[in-house]
Image (cartoon, rainbow, N blue to C red; front, side):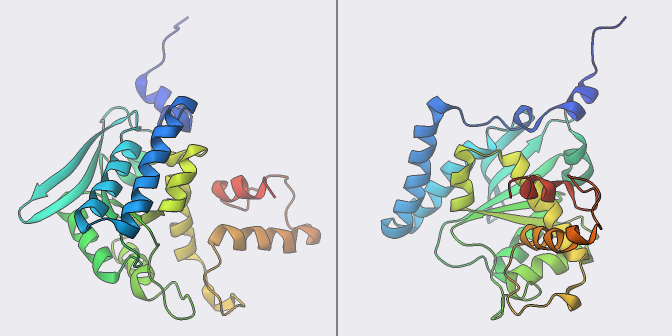
Length: 255
């Protein structure tokens, strides 16, 4: 009997912590220092210090991928790319192979403004130039929205429309500094997958029946609310309902 396993089969069975290495207890103080430096320079640092602190934090975060090489500060003509994450061909789990490919682009924005339409447009152009599918923002605030928090205008709407027009081949997600700080306990790869599928599923949703003027409620919270409404009607027959995406069950299991 063979006692070996192919690299491909191993990667498809690998847990998230075998894709992105969690921050260990002895490393948490250093990681917190990186986060604190981002927060400090945001208030009192120069423009360069603000950019450098966020890029240092993201170099650390991306560098914990066990299946990728990270290139910081890559120059293409007059443009600088903050990070290129090159996944190792032959060591790609299904999610990376099917949805990300061998390359992702990371851009850091350490200012108090929301991510703008121009920011999204520029990142998509970088994705095209590097033949990448996934762009990742790291920032103080998330994507700009409309006055009623509509997800279909401003930067939030721009990234959705670009995803649709490119047949989900150009996906942009973002991590705020608070979300990054939560990596003291959470896994970046797990969060990345949740954000990716949340965007795809939310784009596919029909908003015409969504009865609220506040469209800022996160998608997974709306799924939880829907589950709570329909469960008494016996429309869900499983404790971990297959009707909901996998990432939603992660959230609902904690309720």
